[in-house]
Length: 140
Image (tube, rainbow, N blue to C red):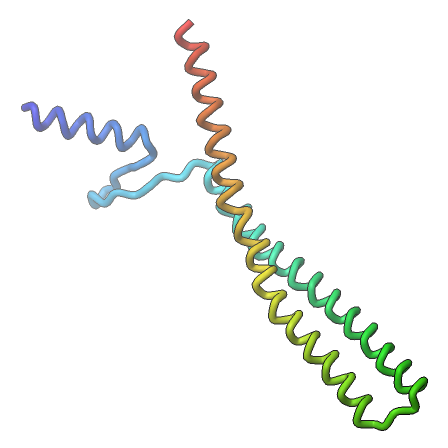
């Protein structure tokens, strides 16, 4: 009798916290509309921010390489240097650009992923504070 009531209370607690039991007896978490919206927004943010940041860094690296190439041509014209110096200059520019492309991946991933848990934490804090304030009005 007491164990039956204990299981009843446990089932009500699970239901109140978003857990439900399916017809087959499996437990699953029921996500409300706001949580589903948050998941979709998180995925869209991760993909969009990664693509945007990666593109921005690649564009900056390309502009830097173009600037480097112009400097190489200017130095070659001024010095009338041999072709070997010119090729070294371009090789250094390409090396710097490839390094920037490599770093772009990590920078883009960080920008895409770090804000997501922070946004979820902020949202959770808003909900907790909102419920706390609402509870204060219900008691009075």
